Image (cartoon, rainbow, N blue to C red; front, side):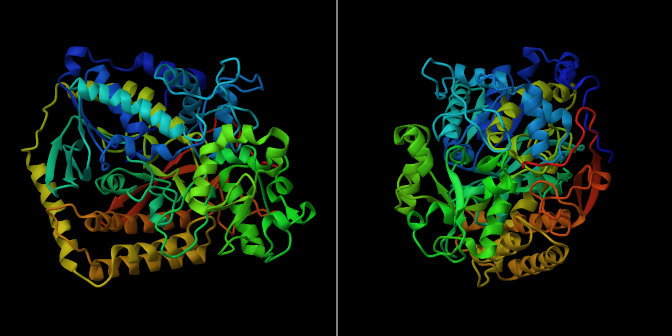
Length: 636
């Protein structure tokens, strides 16, 4: 298949307007005859479901949580970017586009990245109209703060709970349409497979997580809004239920998977304290606005942080990256922390952390200012650690976080399967090899509210005259049998090892060989180890309980089966990309100063992988830079 990005012709700043002017329209009476399935109810899913329903489509929206309010979008605390230039500090749509493109180390599509910046300003107005309580200056103007990888203030925020406030707004719009009977909300349902009829996405097979019932749902188009897959590392900032199963099932049905190895390690999480831990807690990147990161200059220093004088502290980000300091992009800040920890300067119980210190900010600004900006984060930190971060530095550590990789999508956000769309974090579209902070809430919201509702018409208009196969179609019966057979197979193993035991083993391999840094030897070793884990899993996993009931062990086992296959592809993708770029750091390809060494001549493309009977075939979407000349990504 030849990859067609469908990027409109013309000037960069005119592409989205041109696309909208030329796209097909469907009259309101005909929209009532079309049905769309939306899988996921976070910011992307809720926004898409609500907006499509407002337009007149019938929508079914699925989420595995008991309520859409529990979607993981709530965890994005720090803010949402927009090129409003309220501070008159030189910001613009073009500068925001360039920051995002450079932040992703020039491994994203120009047109998609520009559209992200272009739609950011109207999105803030959209949320204000929905009642989001953004922070405001004394005079009433919306307040801004900085985030990593930029030198302007463009991040809008609601204290340290921005994601939660945005999700509540989206949830309100979604449930308005539920009450209007334009959206059927199906919580506690997990999509286990995709149904393809005539080469097009026509429905899904789901499992009711409360009863175990397997059910068929038909639609004219399917939208995946299922978030990221960094739980492949097991320990991550993601909620326990976050998974990549829906996009992986779509991949195995023909949707290409793009850049799976591009996963972000967040520099500001709470450190792991024991092997029995099941997840890590994210502390917002916004803390790096006022907090200063340091480690003791002396290796293995056992003194309490407040006992270490200033001259014996190494503010290593300020030392290495003076232009950006503590606001260096996430991939760079994470690798710098790892380098200091590996060199013996780590702190904390397992010597796997660094300090984030607010002493100077409190002295200069006053405690009340820091409380106002980050109070809930400091409260959360004290609840978890027992430490008062107003008087003693926080301990933070890098942790698996966001997935830049995901299903390959074109300019319309359609995958390589006609009628199947991927929006938000589960697609590969805007971020390249590294996402800048506060662009996650932005992409999810823009995809759901603004882009998909304007692009899906182009496909659905052509479906009006086509047959609308229902759940009685033979293909639904076939896929349902396959889903039930896999469930029966996994329960019948009745081995001796728990799902968590296998996931812990997989996570250690992935964190060691395919996280902050990778090398050829380690990746080859990881691929071999993952294959062994997969064989052992299907021979010795033990799933207690039955299939016709609520069974969290069965849920975890089905998801881990997908993670094992995805982990192998992540390592294959990292192995074939013989360069360093963004979060993908190959140790063989670095400068003398230890920075990423990109190879634009051979690797200026998006790797898009096709699944073929257990093997993976590489397709390349060449990245053409017509408006920006890729340069050395320096933050010094």
